[in-house]
Length: 375
Image 1: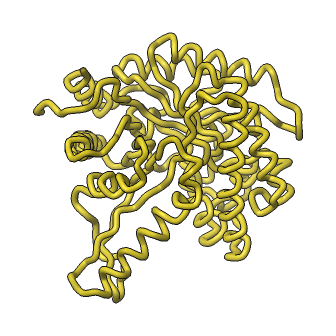
Image 2: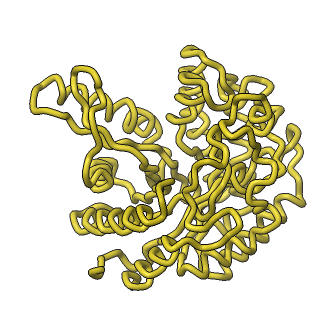
């Protein structure tokens, strides 16, 4: 493979989420997934990859594949299991993990909300209750105070658009409350929660860089007619741009999660096909925000031979986008290991490693690309 071009100190990493890998959790998702029919393979996250105890092995996986960054979430329900009680032992465990990452020259990026809530927050309505804005801001500020010296990069919310769509509009994910009214309320409260978290974190430690991990989809008109173009532009505004526009002043960087692309037409089916080079398109469009960009998630559950091609092709698109002026500073493959994939249980396998931490060939391909294209 030809040598790609990436900036000096570019972050090549992988991503995970606490609920999906840690096991033995006590939050709203852990409760919801025990209800028959909510998870397709009828399994739960109770054990998962047991990363709460095996986190050192996870760091070795990163090190063994030459990765220099790791995006992961810290579990609010572990840290603050009851209102106002911050568990020092749990904080200590996360601190030990963060220190070990830094010791191994692996840059941590920490996510504060990755779809799960403490039970005491869920029981008051979660993000449909405005009290949650204050509770979340308090939690965010405390985390910046505890870890701000060791963690510079923070993706505060993970995919608020997906959370609202799956949790309230489609309602096949926790909290599973099919209500457009509640969904819209939660959506706008998450905008406020991000803003308040930003203020709280900067007050606790001004050095932290606060961003978001926003699920973005590439849209292009299927034809040249004005109706296809208008519909395509509307889709970009709703899915990719509105939330970011509302929090733009409270962003130090933009994180993009990318999994899908569509051609759009003003007839059925409205979404009519996939787009080649969709990552490149998304990154070029994101230049408009004038922010440093990280690709905070990008992965596939396809067969590993296809995963290898996926990684090679997408990193080529990233190199091209950088050459064309995108301030892209890092790439995080989803995911480091196979895990509990929400309502799909363990049926979807995104990992560079399987759940027992055995490397797939795609992990070796990623390592080779990193080593050949790092400065």
